[in-house]
Length: 219
Image 1 (spheres, helix red, strand yellow):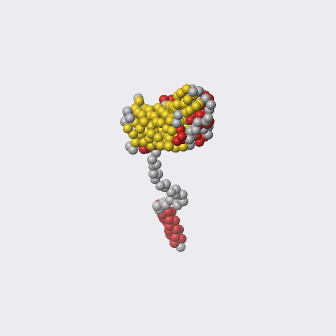
Image 2 (cartoon, one colour):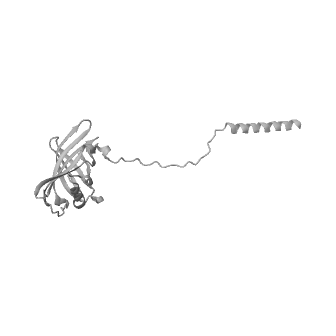
Image 3 (cartoon, one colour):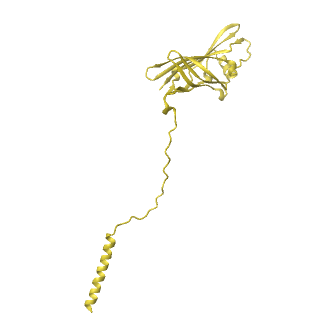
């Protein structure tokens, strides 16, 4: 009887040890963990910009200028009015399809030889004191020709009026990556609704206005 109980006890111990060995040696399975899945964003399609479509040139104001010239009869004598500024900004992009860009001139800064004239031009003619008229803008649509005969065609906005204009002149590369364009165009005052106020000592003002642009662009 004692022997029988001993055998039973031994058998029970063997079963416990075997069960422990089974659980100790069985392959371990990692517990399931819920991980939030972030959707993979769709690939971004690059948008064509000036920096990816060609060489970008930026206006160098210190080396650039824009000038207007017209004639008037002042106190009974012919007089040539010349107004100029270096407050010029903008860019020009050279790509496989050609050159295009935009030039902006701060009309408030145009200066002649007389402050009284400048005030009259700004207040009554260009009306540059109004925010919408402060800048004269030339959107360059194309540049054609050679170094000795260049045509710069685009849309000129003055006094809120936009008209197609072609500047003609020259272009050259100076030093390291500086492109210089010198070009002129003649426009009609009336095309841009530039009306001269009645002033006793100014008998007449020309309808034609010459515009001269000397623009240096740096890379």
